[in-house]
Length: 75
Image 1 (cartoon, rainbow, N blue to C red):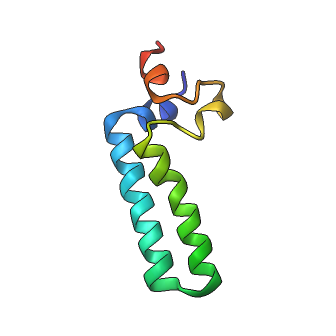
Image 2: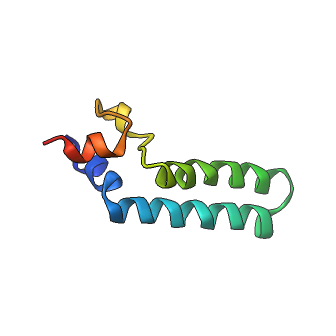
């Protein structure tokens, strides 16, 4: 199992993804504005939703399951 995927699926990794997602959404809507801000906010929704619902969008790229609990259970 890739150590980056294991870290992203850990509780600390989930918190970092949620916080990063919130920051990107806020920056997009309040700082950047216009079309670029909307795109940044939409991109920020990906790590936010992934962290909240406990899945890792990068895991399948490394041959790991999408589900956070399955990643943590793997050795």
